[in-house]
Length: 184
Image (tube, rainbow, N blue to C red; front, side, top):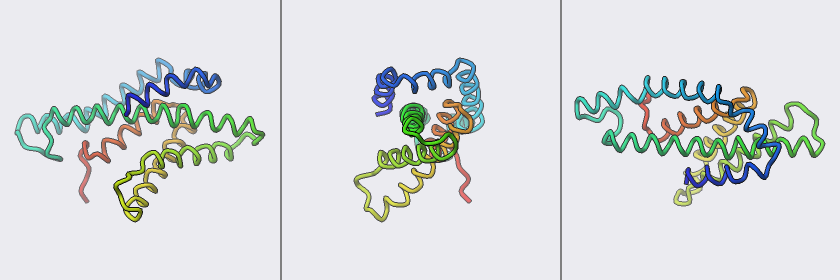
């Protein structure tokens, strides 16, 4: 699903000229190198020592996954985070804010907050688990909505889509329990 979402986003970008220009400005080679370096440092400080200890001792520290399975799961969660950020923040959020501004809203916080809220609702709806009861799904949807709002605010304040992608990948890895988290 991550690869399909990434492909759909790349096909949609040329149709949205202003969004495409803004995304291209945000996705510079310098920012890509910064994000890759930050990601490598974060991965090295968190996941790699855990994998090394598991390989050396043969015992699972955090989750009972084989190192190869864990590495594949980390790759999958990373692809999903990048694709969702490119679609929801890089395409939809920029387009919605642009539409609100074109519709006559004054420059400032209001169109940005409203745009982030609209995209966050869509993001939460995309994460509905049809097998959960409504009582169990409500807290999960609230969490996804709030995290989406934070990622949207991160993009609007930093103007760096890579930073939002990196944060989303980190969230995915923590939620999937692929990174060690404190238990207290």
